[in-house]
Image 1 (cartoon, rainbow, N blue to C red):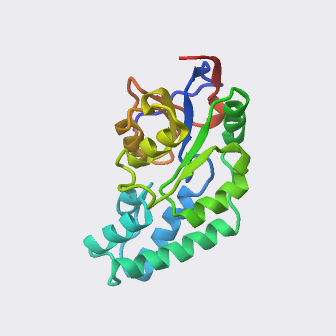
Image 2 (cartoon, rainbow, N blue to C red):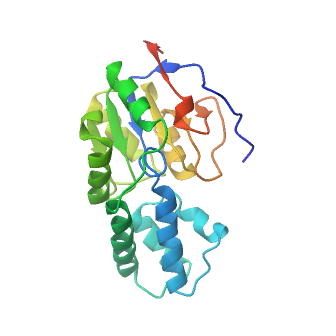
Length: 225
């Protein structure tokens, strides 16, 4: 991934019809906790836990991660057993406390001040999403979509389409905020514009994609698109 240009702050982004935010790694610093959970699991299975092995798990839903472990022969457990162990260990990490990413609350509060409805769109399970919603403040969100609540999860567009529909807006009029290639693919497939704050390599700039190093660089304009 080429270096992201350093900015004190980008010009304000056009005000969207809705703000659709990923959770892990984007609003809260849990993506690394998730990858650490996967790495720890791999070590217990005698499997490699290097960056290349971990890369496909970034932004992956629990069931997808468990399926990948089984498919690639990285565990002797069944997908259901692997999912249960990953879920237990990751949930414990989140319950112990998560750090809010710099600029996240300011962006959410800016959207609220402008009257822009906001959704949490996460590949985490509902019980993990609820823990984080309590940390971020439920009043900052109008709806949320968690893993298993759409027919397909990220990288498919379904979660973003569901969030837009719940808010009564068209996905192409929304701004999605993501940190992984998996989530970015889902948002772009839904037709959203994308504000990307990468936590892992793989998101490329494009006509509908703006990259930043931190949400502190991002703001929403008073005027609509």
